[in-house]
Image (tube, rainbow, N blue to C red; front, side, top):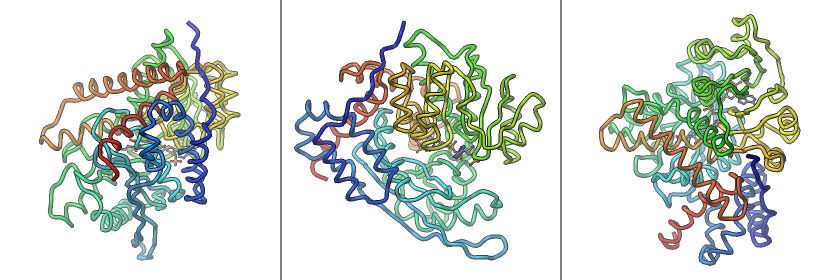
Length: 455
Ligand code: NDP
Ligand code: 2IT
């Protein structure tokens, strides 16, 4: 069966004006402008069908964060030198539940990036069907090369301000780039110390022996592959025996690789920000995890331990021919040119494990080229969905088995896929998961915002 994907409709005139106002009100924030434009482009028909959304100015309201917190984070390194970083928490929308979304520690973090991620998070969280609003935070702190004690002191200083703004019914952060279980531990420890409360539900992604849920660590990567398998099933295909390329080698990438291999896929390449490893015999996931998670080293170190692998410093991972491509590193890492190369090399499906890794031009080429394209806000929603399952376990002081939790995750991803597919069909863009995800996520938030009155 040949798929009939359709490109996104051109942006509606009224929405164009709303977007122009968003750009005017938020100068110098290109990532936020792009993220809002991407969603608004899909909403023309929704507004036509629901005049009450326009009357209540839902789109203008959804583009304005409920609250934005920016703070100073002073800390001392191991030599006693003082450093100052900037901390952010953007509490974007709480119509469906407490603000929920990760914290990113990376030198590139700024308000535009936090707002783009927070905006995406609103619709992603809505798509899960679980009671979570949208938020995001982080810092321009660069964790690279920092010792354990430096990371701890930074996290403690960060939480010394953040604790005033979070809480299990208010705002529940988790990990993202540069923030994993170790950082969540230091953040939780400081929250507990300041508040004198063992409030497990204030953070997710905790260690499993102190309130964390099984499968949360694996959930984003696993969920992305579950979404991919659903897209493939819809076109009569599967992961089995397919060549796969996964960018990045962090939390999302490692678990995506693991699940692809469990399902019979051949993962032949991964990367970090320094280079690409091409391993035609298939990535040795146990070795890669050891190098990355235990030794905290680079993919170049992995390549040295694998005689058949080739390390390409500064290489472009998308030039390696594959059937299935999973961008799992960072935003704008897959350009229009990369998309053209992937299509020419026979790529049939792309699932975004990262948040907005494919540029606007790349997305258009995939849609026009008949490639099954799963946008991040749908494909990588398994991470935050499992965070919501962690909150559920914390609230009931219970913990579920790995098998049960993974089955819940798989069910949620299948439901998100179905919702996107049906919504795209209903709004005249069959097979277009971008339109399906944007409209389905937006409608759920818009209905709740309408019901809650002008707040
Ligand atoms: P990690 O910090 O664990 O890993 C990030 C990985 O991406 C590292 O391998 C990093 O390499 C690599 N990377 C970063 N920038 C680049 C670049 N410019 N080129 C190539 N590689 C790069 O983060 P996560 O795996 O948690 O997050 C990855 C993406 O997934 C992000 O977009 C995040 O927002 C998204 N995401 C994460 C979720 C989660 O649960 N953690 C949930 C949903 C989405 P290096 O070490 O060189 O920096
Ligand atoms: O982008 C994301 O969805 C995340 N970083 C996970 C957020 C969460 O609250 O688990």
